[in-house]
Structure formats: C-alpha cells, structure tokens
Length: 220
Ligand SMILES: [Zn+2]
Image 1 (spheres, helix red, strand yellow):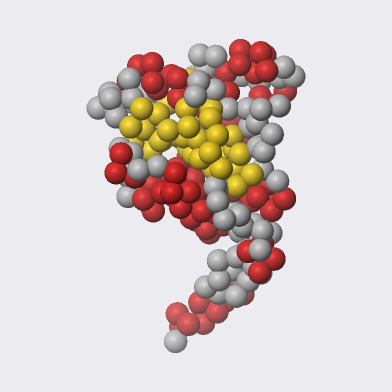
Image 2 (cartoon, rainbow, N blue to C red):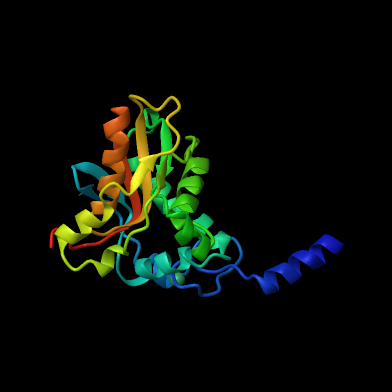
C-alpha cells in the first residue's frame, strides 16, 4: 500500500513528459500527439570532415532543437533516456550493428564539464550502448581548452580551433576495430572529424559517427 502512495506521489511530482516539448503526457506514453506528427520517417546521412559517415535521426530545427536543450538540462535523466531511443534506432538502420565493436563520444575539457556537471554526448553514448548492447568506452580526452566553435567566424578558424585538442586516453585493444563516435549535433562536422581523425590516425580503426541532430544546411 505504502509503495502505491509513494508511486502516486512520485507521479504527481514528476509527471511523464514529452521529451521534445516537455508537455505532460499520460504515464507509459512516449511523446505527445503534436510532436508525434513531426517525427520524420527517415534519418539523414551526412559526413564529418574527413569523410567519416554520420547518421542522425533529426535535423536541428523546431522540436528537435528543443530536445537538444532538454538533453542539456541535467536533472531530467528520464528525458535523456527517451531521446536515446530514436538515436539508437537510427544507428541500427544506418549501420551493421554486428560490425560496431566500441561506442565512444566527443569529450569535453574537464573545466567545461565541471561547469556543466556532465557531458551530454557521454550520456547519449552510454544510453545507446545500453540499448544496443555494445560497450561504451572513454577513448578520447580534450586536453586543450579552446574557444567555442560558434565564436570562430570562419571555417578556417573553426578547423584551426579544434586542431590537436583531442588525444587518445585509452588505447587498450582498439587497433583495427570499428568504433562509433557519438555527439549531440553535427554542425560543421569539424569537431567530429577531428575526433575521428585522432582515433583513426593512431588505431587504424574504422570510424563511424552518429549525432542526435544534424544541421540541415551542412554545406553552407
Ligand atoms: Zn511534445
């Protein structure tokens, strides 16, 4: 009896929410009706700089842009848990799961992570790892602090800004493997490209990428 009361109390305090617009939904539902209508039937396939394939279930606009904000909202783990589902589904459709041996993510500099309290790409990677049954490892670290990419006005400056800021921090048994790198958004593909290149250069691994959103004007 007591647990039922606690459950009701919990449901009142933490109602089930649509992971995209955060509106309250019925327990057991995944998303609200309005957002459901906006879910695309296919994923998009793009490339990070260097030609590394990158699949994304959504474009960075409307409710999906909103979802990125929700991912960055630390305390709401249940929202992240839900948003991991379409990403995992997209990876399953885009790649041969049997070939992916390790999942990893784009790291943050330790000061940046301390400020935010967590790395949203790591949370997505761990969620996907759990759903797909593929181990997630921290293979890269960001050892240099740099400017935010959007603070660099030109493409050349953005490329320069991420150059050599990542390095491998765990190289145990990763040579020649197929590795999937996860990030939240594919914007210019420069950051993911640099991470992929860092891993590829030292491990001769095959690198695949996946992000929750992709910007829909990647070639501009
Ligand atoms: Zn909604």
